[in-house]
Length: 304
Image (tube, rainbow, N blue to C red; front, side):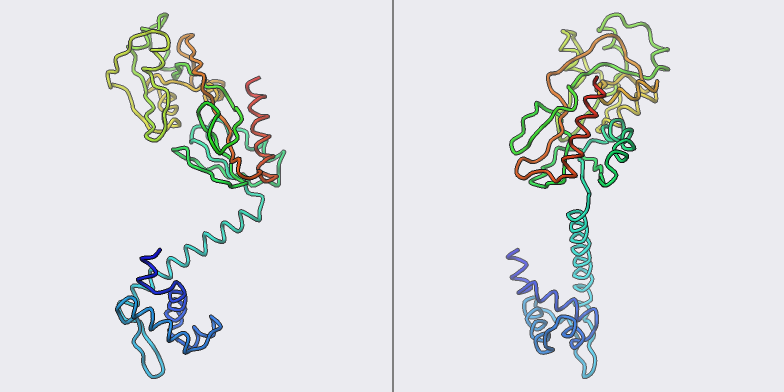
């Protein structure tokens, strides 16, 4: 910020410049900003002195932008337009019934979206926005933002409530399973084509960890798909590309629809879970609290 101040003198100078460049008139800029024309001229001279370049060609009855002035005007007008749009969006969100829920693509697709009609029927005044994220971002002290995280339920600065325990099992498409030999031993599974989830910004259980839990040796042959989004992993499973590690709470619906099926009886309860979290620095808004309560109630009803 200090570099900007040294370069332009004052942010006010940019406001004056934008108005003068847009109108190509110092007097009309002065009228818009409710200042005198000499005040406009002084602000522009200060800006030109700070930048070290002339921004206007001043004629007797009209002005024009120099090449440097035209370049600056493009960036300043674009920047102001972006700032104004963001400020309006924030203002609308703060004054509306909007609630933001930060989730993975897979959770949004296979857990939230199938139940949105029920949610809107019960809470017609709440504008719920699903925002998919690929990392656990901070939600600060916002009173209208919730997020779903994997972990042990303890994060400094957050309240957390369990949605589902982390329970993993191997799953694949029924068409692929029909082509595979029977797998009565977990060692048989290590020799199949496996699809791997490799998220770059947060830990996710691996096939190696799954097999190790059951004391089975596993050597990664690097012959299966490696994807960085769990929604893509499930799509690969449904397409018959291989066997994937299935999170029970996300796979429940595609399993019920016959899109994927369990491979063998082996289930791994990791001790972790998926939690709904929100900031503990400020109370949730009424609409966010209602959204939280509905999600947790729905989670309890699904788990039985």
